[in-house]
Each structure stands twice: as C-alpha cells, then as structure tokens.
Amino acid sequence: MSLSTKSPKTSPIKIMQNRIYELLKQGKRIDGRAPHEVRPVSISTSVIEKADGSAMVSMGGTKILTGIKVETGTPYSDRPNEGVFTVNAELLPLASASFEPGPPDERAVELARIVDRCIRESRAIDLEKLVITEGEKVYMLYIDIYVLDYDGNYFDPAVLSAVAALATCKIPRYEMRNGKLERVEGESMKTPIRTIPVSVMIGVIQDRLLVDPSPMEERALDTSVILGYDSDSNIVSIQKNTPGLLSLNMMEQIIELGSKKAEELRSILVEAVGLGS
Amino acid sequence: MMTESKEIKLIDEEGRRVDGRRPDELRPIRIEAGVLEKSDGSAYIEVGRTKIFAAVFGPREVHPKHLELPDRAVLNCRYHMASFSVDERKPLGMTRREIELSKVLREALETVVFLEEFPRTMIDVFVEVIQADGGTRTAGITAASLALADAGIPMSDLIAATAVGKVAGTLVLDINDIEDKYGEADMPVAMTPRRNSIVLLQLNGRMTSEELKKALEMASQGIKKIYQLQIEALKKRYSVVSLEE
Image (cartoon, rainbow over all chains, first blue to last red; front, side, top):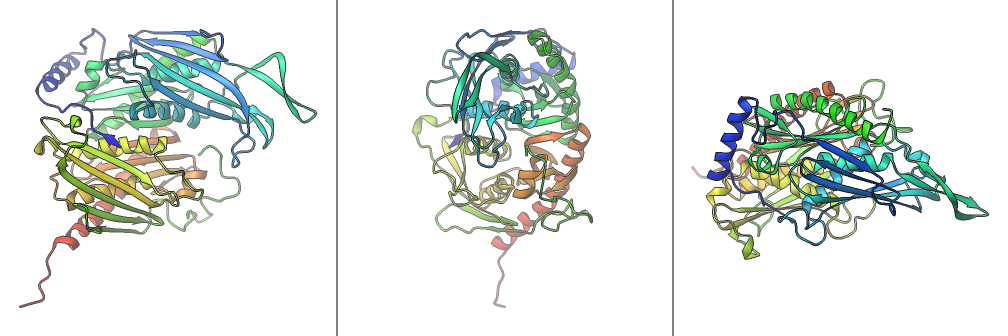
C-alpha cells in the first residue's frame, strides 16, 4: 500500500513556494546559499570499530551513518562468479519527528533502493573479486544506512557515506582449507572499487533549479529528481521521487547541472577517504 | 543489467532486436477499459507478453479513518505481481521493489488526478501484474490511468508510459524482459501527453548525457502512440452504437 502523504499545494506552502521562487530569481535561497550550492559536507570514516567499514557523513544538518558487515555465503545461482552486496536503509525515529519506529516504510525502501542502484549500476564494486570459490563461497557485503538526523536531502549524503564506508572497508580474508572455509587471522583486503558513484538531488520550482534542498524547500518544490553519476560522468541512476510535472526542457538542464555537482561532491569524497579516482 | 550479453545477440546484423523489432518499434499493444465488474473503473493491458489488470475503487470512505485529509482525497496505490507472473515464483507479499514502484506510480497519478475535488475520501488504485515480460510499471500506470478515467474520476490528462533501454550500445524503445536482463540500461518514463511533461522517471544502468536526452525523445514519441490507443479504448467503451433507426 502506498498512501499519499505530502500536503497539498494549498496556501501556506504556496506562499513559501512563491518566496523561494522570488529568491531563486535573484540567485538566493532562504538559508543564504546560492541556488546551485550544496551545504558543507564532512566525512569521517572507520567510526565504528566493530563494523568492517563505516562512515559518518553530514551535509548541513543531515547526518547519516553507514556500517558494513562482511559475511560469507553462497552466490546467487545466476551469478556464480560474483560476490553479493545488499543495501538497507532506516529512517531512525531519533532523526525526525516525522519518522516512526517499525519496519522500513516506503521512504526508507526508496532510499535503500536508490543507493543500491547508484552503486550497482555504476559497477562500483568489482564483484568478481569477491569470490572465494566459484559457485560456492563468496563475500557478502551488508551495507546498512542509518539516517541519524534529517535536515533535508538524505539521498546524497547516504550515497556519500555508503561509498566512503565501502572504500575504507577492510574485508576479513577467508580461505578454503581442506574443503573448509577458514578465516585467515589478521588478514584483510580492501573493497575492489572501480568507480566512485555519487548522487545529486535536484529540485524544480517553475523554471528554476536548486540542489540539496532543505526540508522547507523539499515541501515547496514542484518536483525533484535524484541522479547518480559514475567517475566518467555517465548517468547511472535516476529517480523522480516526488509528484509533479517535469518538462523535457527542464530535464535537460537537470542533467547538465547534475554532472557538475557530481564532480564537486566526488572530489570532496575522494579527498576525505584518500582515494585516487 | 550488470553483465554484458555473452551468448544472446541483442541486436542482429540487420539492426533487429531479439523479437524482430526495429529499435524504435513498440511491441503489439492491446488496451481495454471496463473489464472488471465490481470495481468502479478498470482496465486491461497487454504489451507483448506483459499482461496487467488495473482497478479503481472510490472516491469512497477513508480506511483507516485517521488517514483522512480535510481538503482532498487520499490516493492509495498498490503495484503487485502475481507469484506466477515471473520465471521464478515470486514469494507472496510485497517485495521492496513492489513497495518502491507503488510509491512512484502513486506519485505519478497524484499529479493528474484532481484530488481536491473529493475531500475526506479515498481513491484506491490496484495494479495486478499477471504476467511480466518487461515494462510492467509503465504498462501498469498506462492501465491505471485508464481505469481512473473509466471510474469517472476527473483528471487533467491520461498518463501513458513506456521504457527506453540501451542494448548492445543501441537505444531501443519499449524493452522486453530479455533486453532488460542483458542490456546496459532501462529507463521507464511516464508522461502526460497533453502537457508533454514527465510524471514518472527512473533509470537503471549507464547512459551518457547525450544518450539520455535522445532516450527521452524516443520515449515521448512512443508515448504519443500509446496515448492514442488509450483514447480509442475509452471511445470503444463509451460510444453508443445504436442499432435501431
């Protein structure tokens, strides 16, 4: 079941939308940012000792923690020579008054699937290098994302934290010895990373675009789109994640703006985790 | 979408696809409105081997009551696949994919339905995929918007949809299951043809900016054709043919 939750575009929101639009036309935003300016990003990795990889990312007031646990298991039958990864996301009740405890709702499911798509479709992880014995034993990466504080746009920092955690993850080494899978004590390997995916959330108000919306802006947007990019500026994923009309012309502008912003976010990420891209 | 095609040739020497279509050719489409008795509006669609029913109930009383909105109707949408609709039996219950697709379908429909006409009510839209051969969300929303129209719910336009894919480096319209599995990208697009605007857009897979723009143009061409079929289906259901003089 998927229920409409967004408030209608009736008066208070309409007034806010007009105000945001007027400011955008002057190249300004309510919080003092330029229309195409993302909030300050900070990334710290290996913050959870018990996880094999972890990263805390804040983007403005939005705070995301990703932890990765590595296990071993059997590969999917249609992909016997590939390791496995899964992405899960939770909107924790401590992050916002609008998040409730319980199993992931449609917003959390969407977040997890957007991050998953961005990593999977960019082929960021070289899954063939995560095989222990072909068809039998592979490494399985469980990437779990927690939204700790929600101050708008949890998508882009979630991708940043997932990729930062992956890039710094130490996969404990296992080996087959006499037909038995055994941990090689004290040894680990880095996640085989091929490209550095990032996502960019872009909001539309009439004929104007803005990036990295605040919660107030999110409510006032006509619509919004989240795009994933790989290191070569290919688009690897798209999700229009709110109702509303989007013209083909606006979409063309979104594609161009997205690739610029993706580069900016990627260079922040590369510097923070010390990756040569 | 992750592995390149190894055995299957997705585009042959003559530029034809696995099912013989040209890159810009839709599969055969059959659309019918008013196919289920008890619902307030319904539709059936076949796109190649993809087969989907959609049904609409409402505007009716909101259940549970606390979801009621004072100034408009609540739109509820469920995209669901039958267990036998896919090659390997789908477990019962809603998968994460179905939860996500229910959300994007609902958001697309919300864009065209005049919800403010029916405060304190609920409109339920059910999409049941009985056979899946690629393009189920796009065929599903095409049928769902027709079912809404069949239920007499005021809307600014119908929604028509298709997916553009990239297989063996070529952009192709209305991809089927094999092209989705072994191709490089799948981009479902839904539009309101009268406004020529996008209401649903997703992408799985890699495209350059230029390819993406071209793919959107291809989708919009295909969508115009599907829109005509929707209109014909509505006319067929509602035009009265008098046999008497």
